[in-house]
Amino acid sequence: MKSLKNLSNKDLLNQLRRLVQKERDFTLEILRHLIEVERRGLHLEKAYSTLTEYCIHELGYGESSAWRRVRAARVIGKISEVYNLMKEGRLTFSAVVQIAPVLNAQNKKSLLPRVEGKAKKDIDAILAAFQPPQVIADQARPRVVKRHVSVESAPADADASDAGERKSAPELGEISLHSEGENNPTVKNSTPEIEVVLEKMYEIRFAADEELMELIRWMKSHLSHKFPKGASFLEIFKYAMKYYKDREDLATNKPARSAKTKPKTDTRHIPKAVQKKVWKRDGGRCAFIGSNGKRCNSQHNLQFDHYPIPFARGGPSTVGNLRLLCAKHNRYTAEQLYGDEHIRKHFIKETPVGYLIREQTRRAFARGAA
Ligand SMILES: [Zn+2]
Image (cartoon, protein in one colour):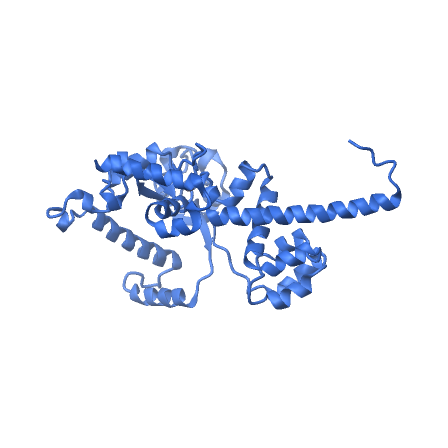
């Protein structure tokens, strides 16, 4: 490595400036390449369900670096002005990552000039004015709830730690304050007929819109005969979901009337037992394998896919002809199979590998059909 010690101060600073410009140009080029990779779906073809995952495992970025690059790349892909501002050094990479969730085609004209050359905390303040009203994120938090339960009065000399003595309450809670011989003054000293049980519950939070509130109000009045004191949210949601589940169970267990007239392969229905076997065999993970031999393994949004013979070409719903795919790979393979026009436009021209896979799959079908 060449020593910098002999450089004059002026040269050192000039050189540094040039390097920073180069770094900026490099970053921009990387971002442009990422956009193109995503547009062609090449990360999917390599069995990564997200571009970020591809950046981590194939390009060696750290998680945060990968995430930031993907985020910035998408901004540039959508709003070309950002590219020019970055190129001219008027907008830093960090600033682009920071404004990404707020910036859109509608506010770009007013937002971009305001954040140019600004520091992080100044941008935060500017973004606050542009941000949509805060959304309450879905949340389910485990909670231990205390519950007072009346019990038959127990004999005074009963050993409190004996599980046999707690017969009266266990259906209401998993843990009693009596357990492990713990001393409970409420029970032992003053009111032996009241037992405090701890119950594991969940505090669920989400933002309900007016339509849901209207439905809840309707359910409350509709269920008033069942819950004369007024149904709680817990009771309403449980009732509605159980109702739905019972209906679904009934529909799937009922022998289909058309089953006699139609051959089995005509239905998309996959028997529960088959589903279970496929799920177990694929380990509850996406079984897509890329041209590089890598398996996706995503656990997100899994769906059953008819493979190697697709459903539309008479593929049966059997364990041997089904696999688990994440939603992204399910859509990707469907596009490969059915979206010839789409593929010609977006895929084949650019990637011979994609074409090869399609050809191989096509041949597999031909073999399956023969
Ligand atoms: Zn996948």
